[in-house]
Image (tube, rainbow, N blue to C red; front, side):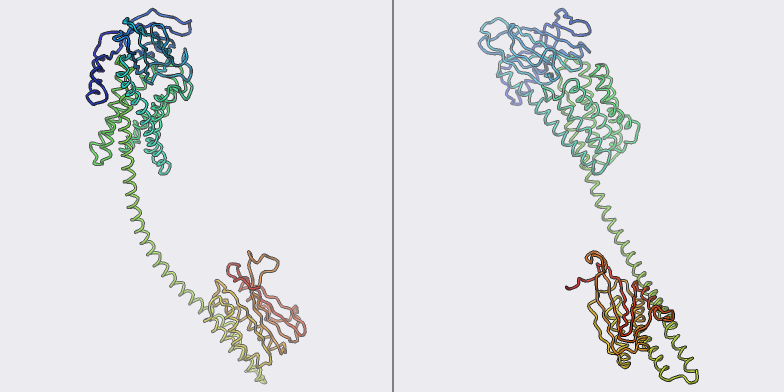
Length: 628
């Protein structure tokens, strides 16, 4: 055991501070001994057969990777412990030892962990260890032997050993176990939760800052989780590559997040950080699998340089900005960069590097919480901005709606004016083509000598009835087929009665025809007027019937297809040949009017029965359900 140097004095000062804080330390603590020197015997495994070197005195801690480089092997550390009270068992507290190890006392094996050489899942180099040495019963010093088996790049080695009574050493071990395992779990959970939440926000909003922060936190949780395992979940070297790659990628990602928050994501430094995050797994694989141990110090130096550059950019923006989150981010960046710089310096220059507790592990928690607050504040401002935009959009939409309603009102007025104009034009055309033609014919008939008064009177009645039906069509309800039929009956009923024709009227309940106007009503009235006029003039009938009903289209499913209004006009007159060439223009005109209505007209005639049938298609959605 070597003399107590400055490092020992620092540790004793720390123990005294813990006692002052009431953490269970008491006066007997003066019996605690820290072993910092030991006799070392090395056995190296390389391309040549195993080589055992001569014993030498070394100072603990002993970091295998720094002392031996990319070589596997075993290290036997021997030292003596004076037995102050041979009847009281001693306890040993070792902050770090591994990868595999065995502990012996006076040649008798006390405990061991893992295989020699270490198996792919054996890695105790991060977990604190506690051993109880039975009472020797003699006053002679105890000869302790700790043998470790280490692999290159696996961070094996041995830290100083703390020796004392169980009641003195046990609290130290439990405290170290708490900070190592409970603290590691806490950091892993916090980083994992914050990273997952940030990625969920990124999935919804697709903003790069949430992606950088979420990936950085998740990678950091993977890196921190390594200290929680003595039996690794993955075989070596993958369990070494995965945490190291996660750590190497987390640093540039979080640095780029900080640049994005202050609006400097489109710079050369930001692009360099993105490139570093992508190649971090390659660097980790080369550093552990090859292994190129010199690559990790260079990469850490590069991380420190870009971290300092990021800190300068963020502080420059924060000093000129009045935004609170920029200032909070600046303080968090200074904290994490200084802690990272301290860890790199101690790790590469201090002989106590192997037992060092990285400050960045705990500084990251405050840094992560600060960044989470920055994100929450940014989301709050975004939500407020969205709410303000919604209010503005609602006002603009209200203005647009008012303008559209005014435009629609003007359009409706214009439509009414155009409709009135078209109706006047139709009325003029109907009067000109129908009533005008009849009046001209009557005039010529009256001018001819010997014109029969009865013929002139008949034609005048036709002209008057046609005029009345035209006027009725102007006032008819649009689409009301039953009212249109009733108007025809009202106007022509007296003439049919005077002609000696008994009219039977049977009109069922009919649907409204969407899209019908006074033009369609007039077309139907003129069609029926011409049919009744021909009946009175030529058929010599004594009985007539008009039936109107709604019926399904034959040969189709009435529940899903159109239905049709059927209007059938029959009489018991003499009949005529409907296919004769001299049948006249009346039938042609009626068929033309039926086509204008979107319907079809059929006619059958024989002596004693003439039937005219008009079918008007009705969409299934408009037709009412028919009673059985």
